[in-house]
Length: 245
Image 1 (tube, rainbow, N blue to C red):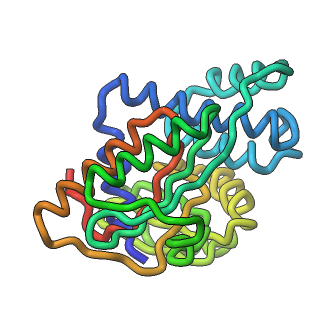
Image 2 (image 1 turned 180 degrees about the vertical axis):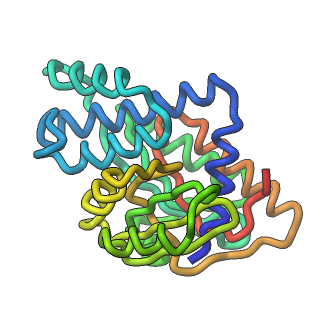
């Protein structure tokens, strides 16, 4: 597995403006609200989807009071907007595989926007399943490397039930099976670990490298446009060498 793209994307997001940070908070808030309304109520002990999203929100530095307010509000709403979870799949420049997860209250608007971005930047939107076979669903936890002993962290992660552990330049990458994610997260949190990122992701099984400068620029613009769209929750891709920030 290669985690460089993941970590670079996180660093890039961290360096964005406060306005962009607010957009990230809003998107995670929408996910939390939908998980409460559609996934089994406001108690994370009985709503595993909500529990995992709370971990994601905390890793993204969403304040606890924001999380609690969103959950409480969603639990009391009976006439809330009806958001659909729609996943789009396609190819970016030079065959880079892209999966776009959305929550939308207007599927025509969202489909039109996503198709426009792919067309504009040298890609093409495909049919359901056209690229998802190139990815595996995994729990992914990132722990900042600085000041930590690699052997000790690896031992703690594997004892907690992680399926894979890798050391990147700046972070330790911990991978779990989806069903083990919450357990590993709880065990490591209990030992005092904090996370740069913590969520269930679509991890590529194969990567596509771009060497053409024009293709690299178009791929970066495609990702930026998708991430800036209010309906888009997550963008997964198998581009091996995103622009270093």
